[in-house]
Length: 120
Image (cartoon, rainbow, N blue to C red; front, side, top):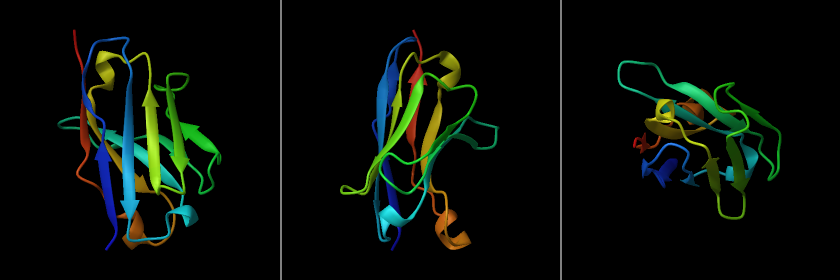
């Protein structure tokens, strides 16, 4: 079945960096756009970044992370990454990857998420 497994979260000081990974399985990864979302308690999940289906494909970012975060993918490894630099306290959230194209079933699949906490 379709699985998305996020990793790489943790506690980091303001200004620090983290690299999140999302390992995908159960579908043909290279056929689908992917995205990273984040969620804080009491709020809806928000789109952080998205990438087209090809390695080096087109990308999109939320205004709040432009210039600081970079989404990328390795289709040979069925993995999507989120490089996060210059982290701020407001980046603290649970981060999730998601299939961003295809059937509603596929797009409705979420991983367990990985927690990012930015604090001094």
